[in-house]
Image (tube, rainbow, N blue to C red; front, side, top):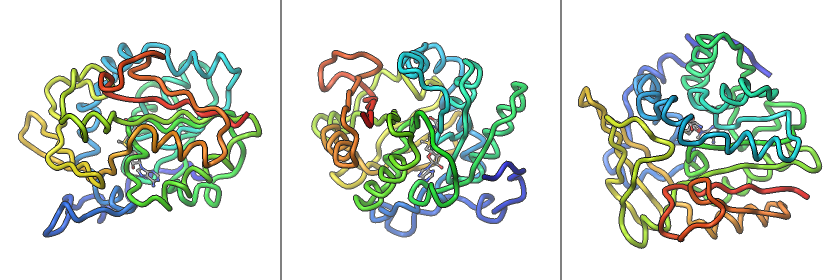
Length: 274
Ligand code: SAM
């Protein structure tokens, strides 16, 4: 497990601009995220998610779900800039923070440090999680619409198998996703109430088909970034979780247990091994 200063690491890669090639909508690879979270985009991520607004909209949802089942040792596998790792540490959980992007991990470490916390970090790709990280966890969280970065089904299955293996025998995985069914079937609309809460930033799809959701993130300083993601349908994701071995999968819509299918912006799957 690493706990290091990432500042200089991969500095060439991180300093680069995003590059989706000549035909951006054909860029559909699970390794894309490495070149998408460039340093300048990472620096802006907290403007996009707005920690205070997000903390207010999520409330105690994740804390309550984890506490209700007595989970204490948590692995945040997509820590990004550290929002959930910090929230959970504050609430008394023992947290380890993973991300495949060195720039994100460095930012998470800095964000936690500014809040007088030392993050336990590990730079790892989900597909090789147990090669780079040791130990078993009570729960894994994979939040902020992160799993959507895996473009190939074999990578999705592999990542879920790695998550499953990193959990104790009665472990739990909490994984969320955008409501892509609504986007694919009815077009895009959002109340922007949850998750990406910064009100001066726009996050909208610029191209969508069954195999790609390409989103544009536009910031007040006129800078723009794109993410090419795989549009996970809700029932497909639930099936993948079951087929990975999770016995019980409950799906919430914008933190509610009952909802109209097209209503929520996000779905949250709570998958349990036993
Ligand atoms: N959870 C954070 C949040 O909610 O703000 C970050 C969400 S961001 C949309 C997705 C994160 O997943 C990025 O930090 C990215 O580096 C990470 N990621 C994507 N694919 C990954 C992979 N295969 N292995 C490890 N991390 C990955």
